[in-house]
Length: 330
Image (cartoon, rainbow, N blue to C red; front, side, top):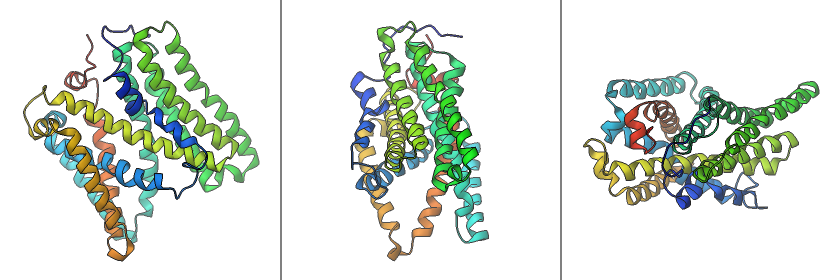
């Protein structure tokens, strides 16, 4: 069923904020020759330690300090964190490494990327209407997840090992690429000025992952690396932008709590937090410090907790969450 646009502007925050930090149009710069076409560029260093790392760990800060996000589920959230710790520790004690969790992390993270993009798209749909709910919820999830899994097949060489399987996979690529085209077309039909923000976001996400799939299909390593870097940057910046948007609103709305006080100084806190956490990450990652394994375990634990918590604390069907993000139904 097609949704009608509710009243109000169609941007989550503002045109400049949305285009820079939610639609993340800056990812296009990563396609410039030599900018992010190798796996050892400075882009990767800054992204891993000062974007990806803070965006995962900031979820723990949010849940620990904000009773509104816990929503009366504190015991369940603590249990999830404890269970993730047991899994990570058990894997290390059983095998002496974390390789057995690599597949779990990759698949779960792929779905997590896809779910976040679908969630942000739903926020825009509540603001500006348009599109089909089922397609935006599940079509975008399936498309983004497919791109990630397709990349895994390409990276391991499995996709190229069987000529017949590769031919079928290349045909499937074209079928899957119909999803972003349909998403854009259904939102262009009857589009109004209010829908510009949503269309910009949708075009950015669909353009990135379509380019990713096409570069994998063409077997262009430099483009695959560039699109992969762009996807990781997009995801982390988008999440931090949504949390920042929430913090700006949380300073005035919602119940009392430590996060409400923190929210009033959020930009300063986030900058210092990212700098401190990234610096600690760089130091612990140096082999000479003997803490690499510990750091790997802590990050796996934080990643699993981040994936699980995000699937719980941002559900728009909870009226208080939608209101806190400024996308409550009128």
